[in-house]
Length: 64
Image 1 (cartoon, helix red, strand yellow):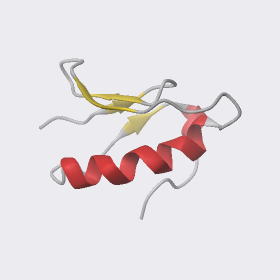
Image 2 (tube, helix red, strand yellow):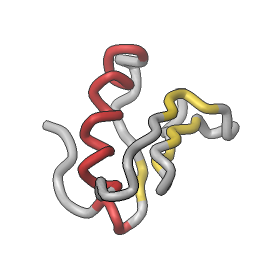
Image 3 (tube, one colour):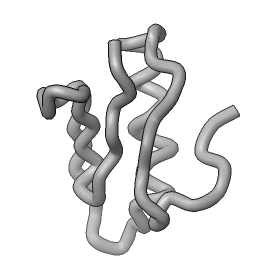
Image 4 (cartoon, one colour):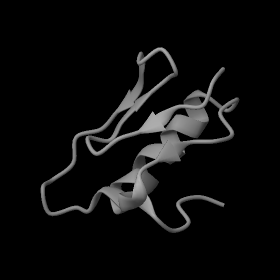
């Protein structure tokens, strides 16, 4: 499987732009904070995913 992309809507897609995970969050929750909550269930559903690309809004360490 290719490397999924994480965008500002907490929508994770595969290289063909097919959704793997979608999460709705409140407007006052920063995208980087919500990313931690969406990556954990994504890992459980797709343990083969090792890398996730994101833009600079997600700077810092998201997962171990």
